[in-house]
Amino acid sequence: MVRFTSKRPILLQGHERSLTQVKYNAEGDLLFSCSKDDTVNAWYSHNGERLGTYGGHNGTVWTLDVDYQTKFLVTGSADNMMKLWDVETGQCLYTWEFLTAVKRVAFSEDGELIVCVTEQRAVAQGAIRVFKINRHDGRIQDPEPISLFHPIGTKATLASFGWDSKHIITGHESGKVAIFDAKTGEELRANEKAHHEPVTDLQLAPDRSYFVTSSKDKSARLHDSRTLAVLKTYTTETPLNSAAIAPLRPYVLLGGGQDAMSVTTTSLRQGKFETRFWHKVFEEEVGRVRGHFGPINTIAVHPDGRSYSSGGEDGFVRVHFFDVSYFKARPYGDLEAEE
Amino acid sequence: EDAAEESTVSAELIASRRRLIDEWNAWRIKVKRELKEEKGKRPQQRHLQEKVE
Image (cartoon, rainbow over all chains, first blue to last red; front, side, top):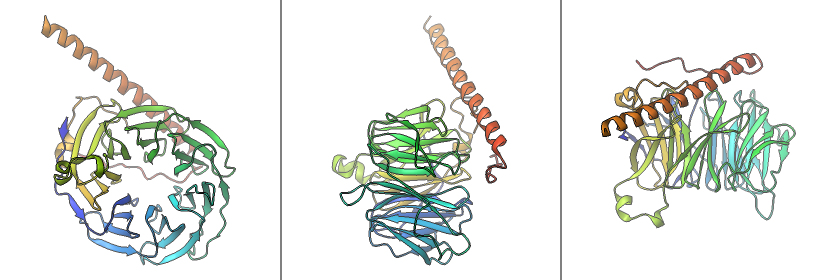
């Protein structure tokens, strides 16, 4: 196994509490981050300078996404609100309010739709809503979703558009993953036993034909976006909070770690929480990058595959740039995997 | 003798990896063909053309 070295990790210090999600825009020039401290930040990904802050939520911001044009940013928060922002001006364009926290938001590939997951509480059932977005004037939006449905049995915590904008892939507290019809809310396919503990992240490959999930059950899995067939399984020794698919090289990046209560002070002090690199096809760990002082909550890979970012329980975002060895390394000789 | 055994094991491992890569690549090629067939029905993908030298 290799300890991947990164050229000059940049430490982004703009959050006072743990990170909940980091995400690059399609071009990769910007990185967005949200956190338990109510703030949302945008950063220039090449130097870590802050472009701006999106202020307005009054509670943990659990989730964000940015559309393919980097025109709109959508955020979801424990204040029960979903907000649409103008990326460039930082202005909040529209706010939707629900009865419970917004746990996950995601744009469709064409930016026309947003899927939104709200939490299950005594006051309201867990729900998945799909909103049609007015892209011409962001300030004028339909307050009502075009579809609304309630997954039964186990609550959904994650959702993303799947193979196309007609299908929504969900991740659930029980470990289930499923595909729903975005319009009718019908459950089309389900894998009840994808994981045996909560699914913590769900990220699609660039062409949306497969996706990776991470789970508290210490494993990550690769699934076919149309059939939900499990293609690969990566079994680690720590609960996982995030998983991402790397372009260019045949790796998935996994992050997690035991929470602060159960780790030694030594490992806390030394920043030993590591991003793990697994070979996507061979299901073997190939390398690690250390740095965080607490569990890794969220990982995103730059769309060009040359760098990645991780957001930690420690309140930091670390931007790592791969060095030549990462690209040159051929631990399995000439066996090359198709992207 | 040990060396012979070792080389058998590694030959097996190499064969197994070759099989895994072949399976994966066959699946990827099939999926990419299907995605291409669907083109026109869905917005243009932003494909990563750049390769590292």
